[in-house]
Image 1 (tube, rainbow, N blue to C red):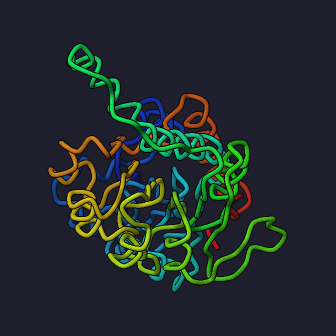
Image 2 (cartoon, rainbow, N blue to C red; image 1 turned 180 degrees about the vertical axis):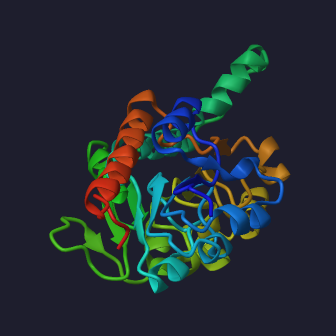
Length: 313
């Protein structure tokens, strides 16, 4: 029987790949052409899966690993991991929360300001020489406006605290009120969208939030509203959003995530009222270093004690 005790679903940073392979003997599943067959031959003793929010871990992989005990993931999202299949067998799952909150919130505010004030549009305007033909169109003020937050978790709270510095009025939508939160809880997402000048999406992805920002919510935000998403592309009805932006029923959008990354709806590429980012919210040297460190700490803690440090609950 194979002696392999760890597999890695997909590639991470090259130095992290090397570290997992050299220190822990992690086998690179993405290099196997026939990975189901490879797992049948080599997965009998695998105790740990290393992965990321991007690569996840499917039920098929979990089912092929009879001795699997832990899934250690790089990233905060876990909607790409088959949670039900893992939990049914008591398999621990860890992610890397908190260490990326500040950078994701920073980018959310950056996208909000850019979408409202047209910074990226203005950059293109100047570079194309269009300023020589006339002035830039007026844009939308940010300070003092109404901010709705969909998902007041760790990242949503950081967004709210930053927005307070812009004297914004803040309300949020969660399934239930956040204990101790100083901002108004709005139990009806449609009403939150109607009230908001800006709606920032920071909730978790997965089946429970699939299409939560529906056509109705987008239309409630309206022709002067700005939608910002640093969560998951699946949370927004992307087709409805594209149509609303095209037809003027939604004012603008700042988007770091998309339903079928890295493929972006072609219609968005020519829209000056949309800011597009390549899923870069946690993509700073400092944050990625902290995420890597926490992933490795989770792995070592499991190997030493049988328990991960930051379990997904």
